[in-house]
Length: 107
Length: 117
Image (spheres, rainbow over the protein chains, first blue to last red):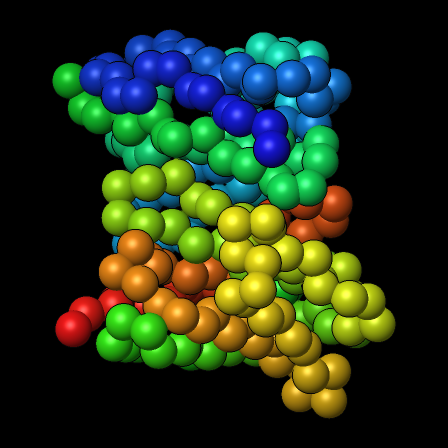
């Protein structure tokens, strides 16, 4: 199975900050990387697919980049509703696997 | 708009089985890929298995092989996940999710399964 490693595991930031979360795959996955946001008690919500494509309805302050084994999720200007946990997930091969999550907290 | 409605929370004894259902609407059920993903407290999501369509054989994560059964009833647009030989480590929220090629763009609300003696 492909292992997905996120960093950092937690992050404190302020409203308006630019934030970057990284995800590394244990082997090359081309552009087959998705990002999800999850709020407490809710299901994950797809933000970015295929490394850099914005899911419909997701604000443009979210962006993704990377290929191969290294990927990033960037939030250009943090809003109050962005404080949540973020997961990366590879869609390159079965089984699809997720990172352990990055908990984004208010500073 | 795709909607996935799951069955309610369950409390089970160790060694027993649980069956969770997922009713789909707003999607062509027979040709839709559907997966089951679980999330233990404080952990990342974990894919358990899925079905590409009602015409195909389910695929299971090796970790759950022999213990999980995924099925789908096209006539009712309901998918099921049956997990047997439950242990305390199976306490988690179980989700059904749909989307193309291992990308999950619609999720059910989740079903909490608690294994307790």
